[in-house]
Amino acid sequence: MVPGGRKVPPRYPVGVKTAILFFSLCLPALADLAAGLQALQNGDYETAVKEFTPLAKQGDSTAQFHLGILYHEGQGVPRDYKEAMHWFRVAADQGEPSAQFNLGTMYHEGQGTPRDDKEAMWWYRLAADQGEPSAQYNLGVMYQQGQGTAKDYKEAMHWYVMAADQGNASAECNLGVMYLKGWGVTEDDEEAMRWLKLAADRGDMHAEFSLGLMYAAGQGAAADAKEAVRWFQAAADQGEPSAQYNLGVMYQKGRGVHEDLVQAYLWFELAGLDGESDGDTERDKLATGMTSDQIAQARQLAKAWKPKPVP
Image 1 (cartoon, one colour):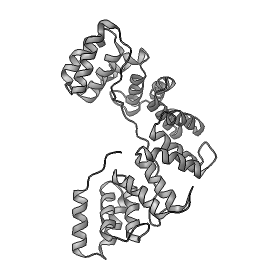
Image 2: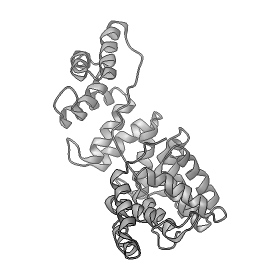
Image 3: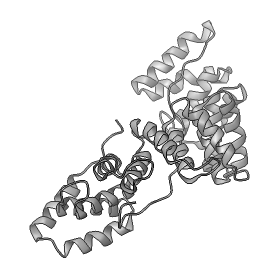
Image 4: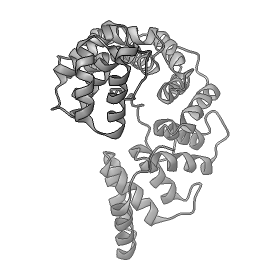
């Protein structure tokens, strides 16, 4: 751990999947469905709604799924979570895994319905059993955190491995955390680092931050301040507040990088803006030893800063 830095628990994001999927289609509906998908791709959501609605009412699960997304996102129609749930449900009842996943997410987040983690798990399980990696990942989170079920680290590991084997970066990151903490598996820093690197190479900022901590502490590999800076920087550039804070510490202390108070102030400032309260505290302490020009330069850099997209 970086001296003066902070470790934070990993985050477990859950979100509605909105990728366009293609399924086997019956020939009579092919033209209308293709027109709806083309309209969707063109951002012509009103036309997409017009094309999908009659097909969805006729029982086409692909049209039902996409219509659910349009209502969920308020694209081409007013946002309506209950209507989104309706269309996800009828598609899910036909076995469409992405609709099952989205329905689980809506129960998990209480969108259009009271939150119900057990119901969320039911739909996630159906999608996961069909190989849907996001559902497998979310099941792992729920078993790890004991949501809708008793906490079960071994079951969480099972679903993380299933998702990670399909390249799910969040699952790879959480597997790294599980090995790091010895949750449901024998503690193994080298295995933790292996999984975290896989996730970090896909641009997962939480994995990048965790790698920074491991290199800073010499955990799973020889201590390497420059490598720690590299991973803190990668996560900080995406807006990870604890990585921004620890990067500020590295610049402040000259660890793995030349001492630079302007850069230290910049990263403490950004960490504070992103919710890391200690960033504000360290920024104010640092300012007492800086010139007014240095502070003005750092503030200008912070004002102009924008997060980098995931590689």
